[in-house]
Image (cartoon, rainbow, N blue to C red; front, side, top):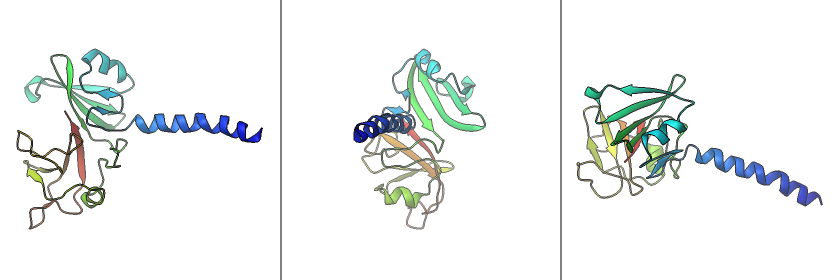
Length: 171
């Protein structure tokens, strides 16, 4: 009888914990509840508890919004033809299955199996991946994600171990 009561009491807690962790999981198709391919209307309805700032058209590649939770910048969402095409996550709340998250240092990401030798320089930052080169010249992770680190490069053209992860991008 006690075992049944314990099981009944623990199962909802486990389910709640899994749900909360998945709310911030980043995969190749989603960042929490924000799913690539969803309509603008669907995404806006999922983000009603957050502050959204539309990025002016002359500075963007379509309809773009910065999503804020109070003072914390969570993500940038990009729409084309009213459909979500790209998400760039900045918040430490979000993580991949490998527990890679914005704010962590490059060495921690490397320790989780990411290859430090495949990178592309941008104006201020470095992109890292461990798979084939994309058509735009950047490298994409096997999971379909792109990681942007601070521009701290070693002499061997590798990302410095202490470079911070700025964002995770999916598209």
